[in-house]
Amino acid sequence: MPSFATEVKNELARSAGKKKCCQNAELAALLRMGASMLIGARMNLGLNFTTENAAVARRALQLLKATGQVQPEVTVSRAKRLKKNNRYLLRIAPSPPVRPLMEELGMLGADEGTVGRDRALLRKQCCRRAYLRGAFLGGGTVNRPDAEANLEFIAGSYAFAHTIVHVLKNMDFPVGFTDRKNSYQIYIKDGEEIMDLLAMLGAPKAAEELAVARNLREVRNQVNRLVNCETANLQRTVNASVEQLAAIKKLSEAGVLEGLGPKLMAAAQARQAHPDFSLAELGEVLGISRGAVSGRLKKLLAQAAVLAAEEK
Image 1 (cartoon, one colour):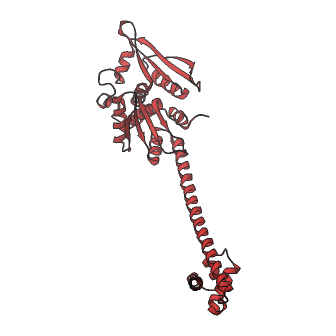
Image 2: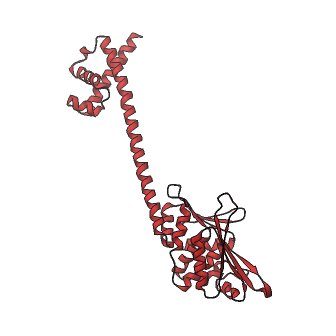
Image 3: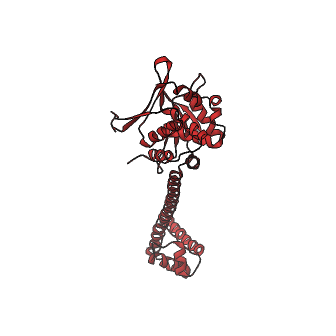
């Protein structure tokens, strides 16, 4: 069964932007996440793009062909790791058309991946969304709905990671940033913000799954709180009843219960007849308020305490 992150990427890969500017922005971010550069004869450039997600591979192929400048070759291999997932390689052989494409996508130069270099790709709101979609397709992950909320972009370049942070912050997303050994992690841990981001990028179904799971957790937590509260109240009732019954027994054995008056006698008999009743339920039996029942039982407890003190 595919992971939730894989399902999200599959949905995003079907969310195809039709504008040329958006396609370039998405392709630029996607290639920065998973592409490596090749240098061939006469300093011609080429590209290798690898992914283990078939939908992402199809999307990358679609975007590359849409440029009209290159014709990628696709090969599939079996990974040697434990899970042995398929590995998809899109190869663009070194050729003259690759350099202008990479220049158009801002992938050449010392400042590759910086906000300044990508400014032409990020002028429009729709292009910024496409840019983030490409970044997530290439190096994003998100926890499953029943787990703690967490969405991440994992980038290999500091400049590119900084660009993602810049774009997310400009869209008012509460983003965090940290570095790992050989990569940079951009993360969001607010559940609502993650749902908003996924919906904005083109994965409304995934956002809805997160919302449903969150609502279920809230209902479950509320039920648990109510159950715990009810359990605590029941335990207090049982403890109080045991103490009251012990006091009534002590007064009865000492022969002083009947001398305490009809009201206290009635309260004692009601408690003996209904040891598991709450004060409110005893009040209904006696036809008095809960407070009145509490007061009479407290008097019985006090009388038993006096009797115990006298015996000492």
